[in-house]
Length: 186
Image 1 (tube, rainbow, N blue to C red):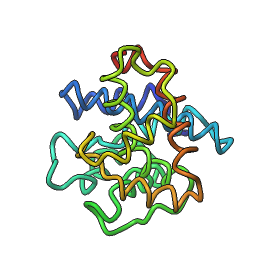
Image 2 (cartoon, rainbow, N blue to C red):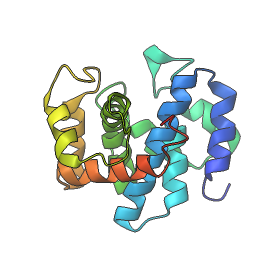
Image 3 (cartoon, helix red, strand yellow):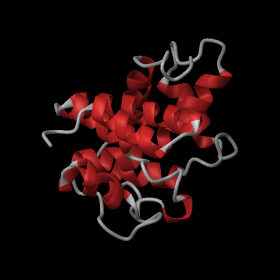
Image 4 (cartoon, rainbow, N blue to C red):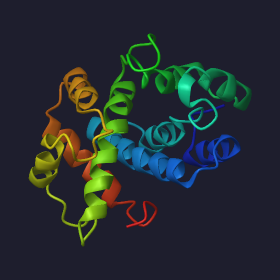
């Protein structure tokens, strides 16, 4: 298979996922990954496809997340580098290896949790994602009770791995998600 496309990623995820909130999360991570790709000058559609497909095994194996990615994606012809990138977003959380080493893997590791905070904040704002300021999002980020299930330490660790400031990653996430707000239910 040539580079994974967003269309292929959506078709593959449909085979393994039924829960609406998982498709919404896939779309949010995909949108944020597109913005991160633009930041790094990389292939936006490929990064979006990886983001969309990152939780392919979650619904069927929530207790063994990232441990069944390979068996689901190899038969689809997904290349090894893409499989490794997807598995690595669970590094230190549900898998020991591989550690995110590339910008795409580090970005996926970071924005997976961060999109949850952006989405939760967008849902409580009358204007949704429109006009969302990084400064306001950062206040919500500091409030541990807000979107409490989103692991701030993972986000900070990801920013460190990327060599990026949290505010810059937040700006990418907001920008990417704003561009896909209809798909995200805003």
